[in-house]
Length: 176
View 1: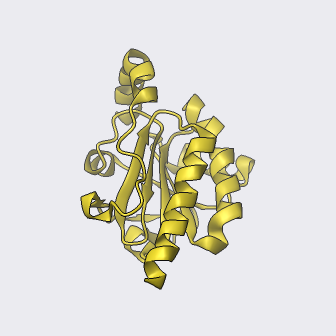
View 2: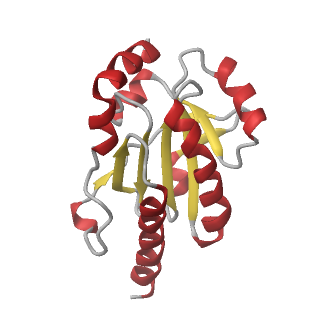
View 3: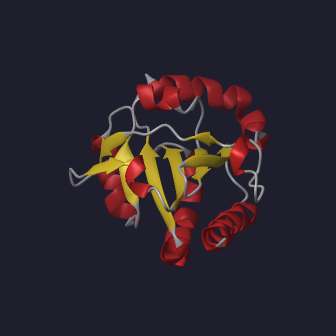
């Protein structure tokens, strides 16, 4: 059902979605941020992944699917970010929205050798995060609040700058 919804929505609003950007990361604007809804889902190894377990880290939360062209372009960028910034406090979590779940996702993970946690989402989680097109990527600050959200493909360099701002802002706030 989700793929049916996404494929009907994306072609009609693809360009609009690609340019829709929620407020960007603004240092010191934490009081304007809303808490990211917590979830517990299972990864490909059967381990529970809880968003709340990532408190204290900056989280890149990516809603994607194996059939989504833009998603396939972004995934290597997110793998790069995971490698580059994990020691500075970044964690990437991929939420696959494939209708057939692990049947499509497991072979994709194996082929791409993804280096971050991947879970399979569901309609309830998509609704909780207002995901109605793919890709959707959120940045969640160390306090578990949504600092930024992008519908459509992100601009890699601009997004990386936002990640760096969040990581640096978090370090500055911790030292004050």
